[in-house]
Image 1 (spheres, rainbow, N blue to C red):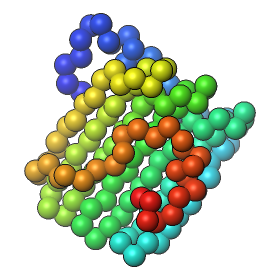
Image 2 (image 1 turned 135 degrees about the vertical axis):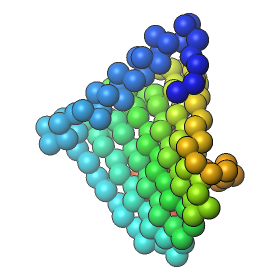
Image 3 (image 1 turned 90 degrees about the vertical axis):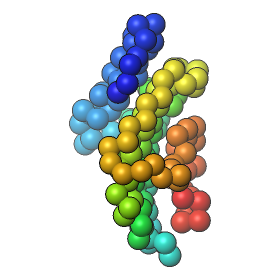
Image 4 (image 1 turned 180 degrees about the vertical axis):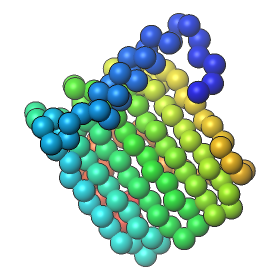
Length: 145
């Protein structure tokens, strides 16, 4: 990640703690995962939704595999269901490899955004970096990806 001011570091660490808690959760005991693979005319799409025992969405992801591009966007939510972090990784056949990270506070306000070009030239397309309704997004079809 780029330079982060001292004022927002504690907020970033708070969001990272939410992400780590979800990534390190015991998926059998703590989180339930639903998967929705779709074969679309432009490629493949896999949506995944993880909910905690209370039914609160904690993580939603969308993986896309097309002829010229592929990528994944992962949205993380705190125990109250607030969107706290987005991670996007995007690749193209032209050699582009881009990563974006966006951190949000509990109110949904963006506190930090990081964009990293790992290879190639930037590519104009990408994924939505904010998803406030993961259950609704999970139910969408190919045309809505």
